[in-house]
Each structure stands twice: as structure tokens, then as C-alpha cells.
Image (cartoon, rainbow, N blue to C red; front, top):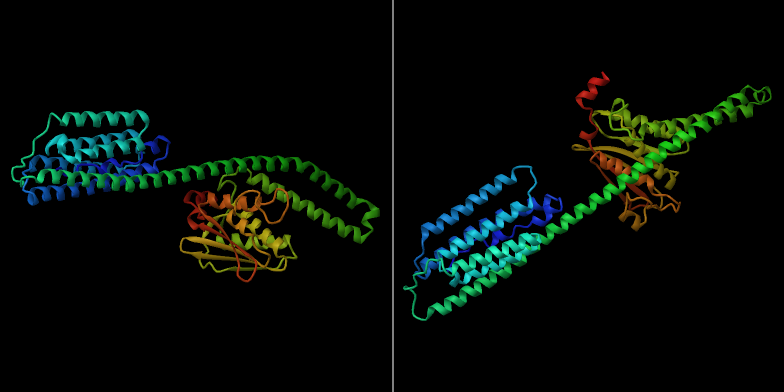
Length: 447
């Protein structure tokens, strides 16, 4: 009878994953390999003790202990490998599987060779190799195991079974085959289940990366379109400004106070449009910190609310800032526009009441905007932050929260939306304060 030598180690579950360029699953499965090898070492010790003490079979303890020490050394080397940031490559995992086959072969050669019922653990190695490796490597592993099994028919140390009772050998052989089958079946179910889980996680990460790349490409195209539109609209706005100035100087219009009030309002709206276009041009393609002023958190939020209220005098915004520390931050134009977008959505849904609250939770800043409107539809909540998902029914709607979600994500934060129990909706921006904090070089430049 043989000790368990390396069947669990064959569950190296990341060869095909790293071939696809994903290292997360490779490192997870290499760690799994280490854990399984420890199990294999313990299994060998238990088996050796049971066969030698329970059945009275003489085993070469020195040589078998040497193989165990080799497996322990391989585990320590794997842990050292995991401590390095370099990706785990598929050839490394294939080599680990070959070393497991070598360990199994050495233990079998010391305990009866091909006549040992645990020789069928080779099938576990081949099965896992077919799942984890590419075609050429899998066929190579199968060829190596076949050659090892063939070599065991010739090169092996016969077991001394003189201590066994007469007629007990066939029974023990059947028991060994049964244990080997249960090991094969159990290990395959457990390990391949974990491998499939890692594959699903890898696929989910790749899908998220592809989705993020598509969204960022969409944002780039939108930024180019907005920048181009801002440049194009600059000319007609300048023309309107000139015309309004000419009208103001016309005696017939200057003598009419009502018309002058309307001219003042029109000029104010033109200036506001120019300011909006200037903000678009500043924000388009701007990296964080460029042409951004150093301010404090309270000043940033207070000024934002003041400007928003001035532009929407009919709004009824309740503003509460309960952040105690007035931290120095960079006035990020994109973040400001993101908060304004959320406030605008609340104003459209609930013109009579809106609430904006700033709270600090550890190292994060929570910005919550609530309203008393109809709330979000269930399908909108499930896809919050996706483009063209809007409850307003307008063509091209749903881009506001999409852009907000991407701005927040760039800063390492999260966007959450819920419906309030008493009616209305709540949108919360959770931002790491470290992403807003002023870096030393920025503070120096501002000084």
C-alpha cells in the first residue's frame, strides 16, 4: 500500500487562466496548490503509519521521508513565489504538476510499483491536466504519466508482505482500490469545482474590464462631442452678446424700463451660457489637479451649493454639512459637475424639496442627495449608472448618472441609489478622502 503522494497537488488550477492574461485566478490556484500539498503530506504520514503499524508491512521510511521533505520544500518555494508580484505563468503550473507526478512515482516505486492500487491516482493527474493545461501540455503530461506507470512495472521495490495473514492480500488490494477510487472522485469534485469558480471569477473580471473600457470609450467620444459643441456655440453666443449690447444703446429701447430689465435678464443668461461652455472646455480631457485650485472641503461644498441655489432660485434645497474637519482638498471640476448633476436630478423629480447632506465615515466622505419625487423604477435601480437608463422618458436620457458613476469610480468611490420608505429617492456618493486630499506637490505649487 502506498502513502498519498501528490494527488491533491495536481489541482494546479491556473494554467489556462494565465494564458488568457489574468493573474488573479493563477495566484489563487497556486495558493490552493500549496494548501492541497499540505493535505497530501499529512495523508502520506497517516497512510504510512497505518500500513506499517496496523498491517505490519515493512516500508522504507528513510526514502519515503525524503520524498515528503521534497514536497515540503516545494511548498515553501511556492509560498516564496507567491510573495513576489510577478504573474504566475502557465509553464510554472505545468512544471508543478510534473513535480507532483514525480513525487507520486517515487512513492509508488518504493511501495510495490504498478501493483500498488494507488497507482490509479495517475488518472487524477491526467484528468486535471486535461482541464488546466493547453492541448500540447496536457498530452505531454499524459505521456509522462504513461511512461512512469510503465517504468514502475520494472523498476520498483517489492513490498515485504510476509507479515500478512494468509488470504488477506486480495481483500487488502480491493480495499486499496476502493480508497483510491474515493480519493479520485472526491478530489476531482472538490478541486474542479474550485477551478470552475476561479474561471467564473476570471470571466466576471474580464467582462467588467470590457464593460469599463467600452464606457470609457463612450465617455471619450462624449467629451469630444461636448468640446466641439462648446467651440461651435461660442460664436453665436458672442454674436448675441454684441447684438444685446447694440440694443442697449438704442434710444428707443433705452427709454423703456421694462425692455431694459428684459435685456439685463437676457445678458445674464448669455453670460451663464458662456460660463457653462467654459466649464465644458476646462473639463474636457482635463486631468485631476490641472488648473484646479486648492481649497477646503467646507469651502468647496458651500460654494457649490451657493452657486447651485443662485442658478435655481425656485429650488428649496436643505443643505447640511456635518463634517467636522475642514480638510484641504483640490477643487475637482469633474466632481463638482457630478454633484450638480445629482442635485439637478433631485430638483427635476421634486421641485418643492431637496436635501444635500455631507457626512464623514472614517476615511470616506458620504454625499447624500434626497428628494420627495416618485423615486426610481425597480429596473432603473438594478442598472443604476448605465447609459440611457432613465425614468424621465426623454430620448438620450440617463447620461447624467452614468457620467456621475464614472467620475466617482475614477476617484475610487462608489455610487448608490435607493428609494426612500416615505417616498422619493436617495443617491449617495461615497468618496475616499485620500483621493480628494491635497498632495504635497500640489500644496507647494499653490503656495
